[in-house]
Length: 248
Image (cartoon, rainbow, N blue to C red; front, side, top):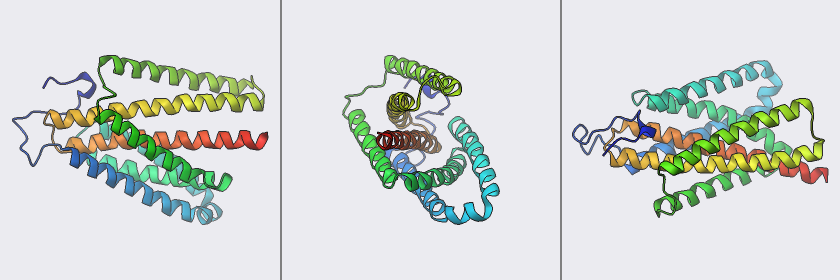
């Protein structure tokens, strides 16, 4: 199978890896589930202990949160570019994101009770729907779709920068700003949903092209990044909607 430029970092070769050492859909699924469970477990512990941590060690916790965000970003780069270190980078990323997600989830649920469970349930529904659409061939990831994704990415980046400038110079009043931000979050959420199709296409590619089992970790990490992004965008969107409702 000819290698796609999109997945050029993946080492393939049907003559190199036997059935035991080749990537499988089952392997990708198990690794993704493991990373999700690990992230949720760390998040739950952090969320439960957050009041005590903030009261006793706020400065230390803030520094730890910043450092974990940086380490999480680096681990994604390493895990996505190197199959050799993808396993370790994925676990580190899950731990870092667990710390981050546990913190923001606890604060969000304190502000708007029930928003975390709603965002989590919505994320799972989106994942299931996109998986069905991809598996049934309704969504096909070809060159046109990838071009669309790149254009969508640039559009999302442009909107983020533009809204940053608007908020800096206070162009809109509070009500108008909330309405616009809800639209922006909806756009960014769609972008996250679209990236799931690329993750599914990558999973399909590594299995069909005979990649090594190390590639399973890289694919699972990519799926984790997309799912966490979607969850955060849902959380932000629901918080904005709640703020608008309270303001009215």
